[in-house]
Length: 237
Image (tube, rainbow, N blue to C red; front, side):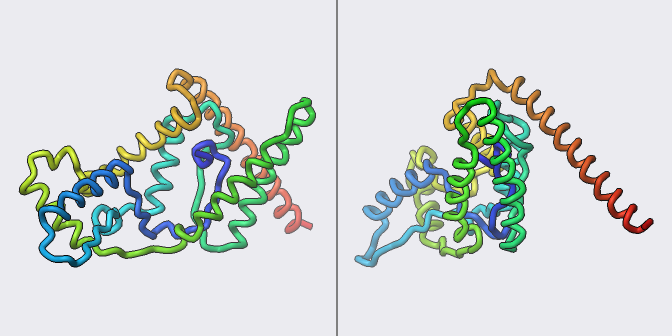
């Protein structure tokens, strides 16, 4: 949600690692199908484990998650967008801390300062600290990758498709998921149900995002000009 609003620019993680992202309806379908398999396929008292995962079936990486979030956060911006949606994964703690200071906490501090001047309650710095805690909680998972066996799951799905007329109604085959289409619905869901931002506000949100883009380019131009001037002036002197 905050990445889509542009308030998070850096996350500790390895972009090439697989994220085992599984839609909740697939989890429910797998539980139902596993109950059927336990009753009709089980031939011994041995405990059978079905790993409901996507990594070894339809791989989706953290970079793919990044691309999907940024793509649809820009295509369907929220009226609550604060900065231009863009973030990156890094495995270097010092670089991540610099991003946090200059792109997370400094903008939040400036926003709170402006709120105080307007006689309003400062909340952005508090919110930034809260989301930092949330990001730190998920750091272990974005910095590691796990490989799970899917032989039992594959056999169960094949048996269900071959013997059950209603197998399509309890689809637990993650191969059928189009991750790009999933990310589009995912971001629209966040926009509508978490941010409570209806699609009618999309034209206003897109205008706001354009202003943010031009403001970002203006500051980049000022920073580049200042850097060039300091370097050129130092060489000349």
